[in-house]
Length: 266
Image 1 (tube, rainbow, N blue to C red):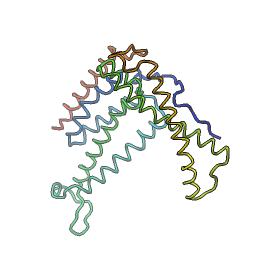
Image 2: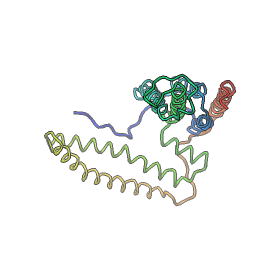
Image 3: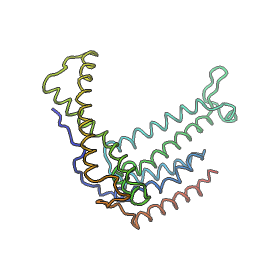
Image 4: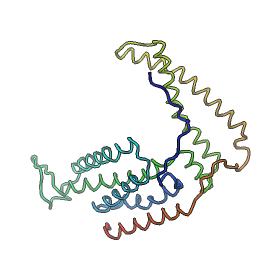
């Protein structure tokens, strides 16, 4: 029997340097590059940013199995699939001066269309990879704390959104507990579509009851702490902006500018 893991259990922080940076630094650093990648059309610029993001992720992010599969399988396959798919949608009149690869009647697949499609796939892959710099090495609570502390987002908005967001792993935890309880009792056994529907229908009522109980506990906890009674609150956990955050952001911007100068995409 599998054991349900509490999503709120304490975990040790990673020793990689990306995890130690302020979440806003990991968002601000690649943001200009992401905006530029929307506009470029060459192959070299997205390839350079893709290599840069891979280097930072491999050196600075906690290398989990999911991240490894994402970097080695998901992103390359998505880039190739999108590239080939977009090449088929390319207007032949734009690339009819390049070498033809396949001809089917009046339709011709040109090499220029393949390059244009791959450029689009590489741009999307580079944008996703740059976004992963903040996504894989930042926790939701730290992001909310940095928004409240550095950008002065009202804590009523930040922590309310965080409480709502944390309902999702809580629901997953409670669903695992309900499944294990039903399995122990032998409820809704059997095979086939009707047994599956019966099993899922048996999860609905206890899951809704657990969600209501959890919402009540969260509301009582927020009320007991006078949430929203004052314009600001004392923070228990600080997420400061340090000198290393400034250094990381500035160095990333300089490297991005260097890539744009060398590749000259415009």
